[in-house]
Amino acid sequence: MNSSNKIKHYIVNNELDLEKIINDYSAYVGAIINNVSKYSISNEDKEEICSDVFYILWKNTYKLDINKAMSSYIAGITRNIVKDYLKKNKVLYDISDYENDLYSYDEIELLDNNLEEIIRLEKKINDMKEIDKKIFLDFYYFSKSIKDIAKEQNITEFSVKQRLYRIRNKIKKEVKKYG
Image (cartoon, rainbow, N blue to C red; front, side):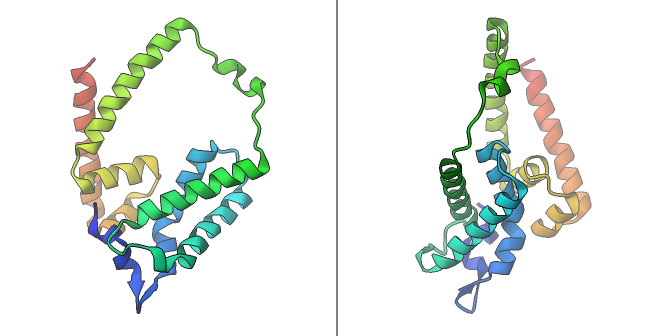
């Protein structure tokens, strides 16, 4: 765990530095909203959910363990708010939305093989150094720019590019290893 991710690094004069938290975690909250809702929430509602997340975090400041990761609190709050929103608004899916997604038995076997490959790749990612994992996830999962990642990690943009290049090569080797 990156020690700068801990809650104590966001406390200034015995209060949460909400502005810094919002700057650091807005993209993270947006990614969680999209993942949990499967992109079924309007942009206006996403903004409202995002502000609710930071409000709830601020409101419950006294309950936070300062030695825990800020991201774990934010992820939990965001998932709960999105699930409540989906229940409240009864987001329904029509079966016709998924007609073209039905699979044949051959495709199911292919999906099973892909799942094994995904599990191997997740293991490879989890075995990375913490900084490499953070850079990889920020760039590919949260779509952060190299410039933003470099600023957050306090390293040069060249270093971020170099790490991404090395990570991609490690993953390519893993893929080639298993065909």
